[in-house]
Amino acid sequence: MGRIAVTGTSSFLGARILRRLVDARGADSVVTVDIAAPPAAPGGVRHQMLDLTLPGADQRLVDVLQDEEVDTIVHAAFFTSPRRDSSYAHELESIGTLHLVAAAAAAGVRHVVMRSYTAVYGARGENPNFLTEDRRPDPNPSLGWVRDKLEAEQHALAFAKRYPSMGVTILRFATILGSGLHTFYSRVLAKRVVPVVFGYDPLVQFLHPEDALAAMEAALTKGPCGIVNVVPRDALSLLTALHLAEKVTVAVPHSAAYALADLAWNSGIGAAPAGFVDYARFLFVADGDKAKRELGWTASYRSRDALGAYLAYRYPEKAGSMLEAEA
Image (cartoon, rainbow, N blue to C red):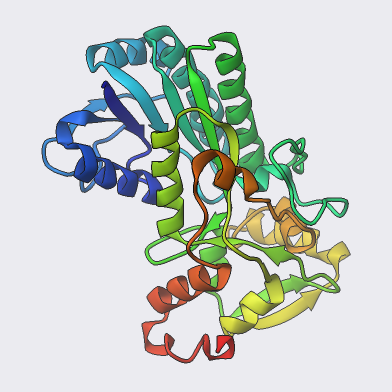
């Protein structure tokens, strides 16, 4: 059996799947490929320094994959929150993924497991209650954070179609929320006062980190499965989540919400650009049946459990009281 290469090892998910792989298979079975060595890499794991954004990165990566005898790649080099340096984000996520799958195909890699996000479906008023994997993604085109991830998916699927010997699994994770995570939602939940859109209360899904890691392990064991939603056992309404977190909500008319969000983002104090207001208005709840059928995986935790894990981490002094309403 060949080695597993892991990208994005400085991210929450990448760092933890690296540790699990080392524990399960040994340090010699794993190699990290990233612009910098993992901050807390397990002993014995080799690191190959590579910047996926540079011209020629694909050819350099072919050499790395062949030298290290890699047959599986876990690609986790994606940002969990929108960034102001959108050009670099595009180069890393979209172009970097193009370099990676091109190199994987040329090097004879058998399986690429790539993280993605249910946000790529887009939050739309016409969305059904549960979005399945055959639903065509339709995100707000102004949202580069989502658009780059959708382009990365498209690159991976195109190469898998062109090179059938290279299988792809794209795990579309619901919002991962738990201790130690820093995402768009954790930034919102860290505030005392949270603006909401007047007249809207969409369902949201929060995925526990343990479920996310278990799904990735199942994907590595199962083999190529295409696109798979990875979601919790239930969903919460946004206002319920904010109530459980003891936040003060301020309702803003949707006509003003977009302009205010853009103003806050452009002034450097906002958590996300205006396109994210869509996700505070409309559904983007994904169906998890394919993960059960194809991966043999079902979530062990509910959205409430993931929210509770985050709140216990963020507000340890209040951990016992904040979710009393659950009982």
